[in-house]
Length: 172
Ligand SMILES: C[S@@+](CC[C@H](N)C(=O)[O-])C[C@H]1O[C@@H](n2cnc3c(N)ncnc32)[C@H](O)[C@@H]1O
Image (cartoon, rainbow, N blue to C red; front, side, top):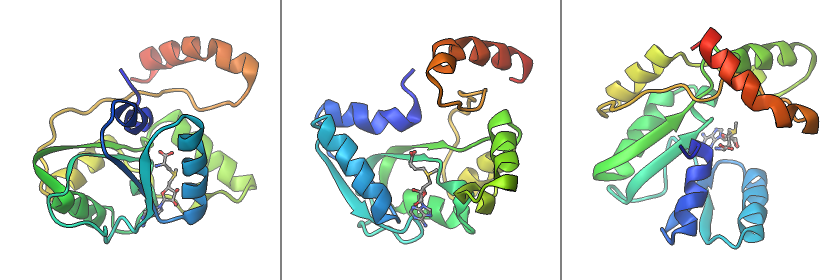
């Protein structure tokens, strides 16, 4: 399975017209550099998820990763996604599960470091399903995919698969 955050990249590689949006120009500069480094053609645009600058029914697929917990009105963003999605189109949403070790780790880190996650409202799977349904979508599938929190360390990254498998069993 291709992780959600990699799917836009995979689609661009296969020649799809991909548009990447974020409200932060800084984030897009970084994304543009990454895409250029991999010779991917992606149209990056600054945009507010609550007011997308696209006509109705513009897209076949929308991928939203790590966004909803930063919005005061996540339902409004989902309604915007519904508006710009073509009939029969698909939306894939990735959030940090409120009940996961990742969210716990982010909260602990926020106690001693100023991070954007201090302003986040983490969403649980049932809450997410409710938000998505209220925005007009039919939920086809829900799944958890990452279990252990990220440690950016070369040694850890070699063995992180084992932690993932263990956590998947302990806290599915
Ligand atoms: C945790 S990052 C996720 C970034 C990226 N989607 C990814 O998967 O790597 C959350 C992003 O949401 C963006 N964001 C916050 N509020 C937004 C809004 N109203 N509209 C669009 N993007 C927003 C932030 O600028 C930030 O880049």
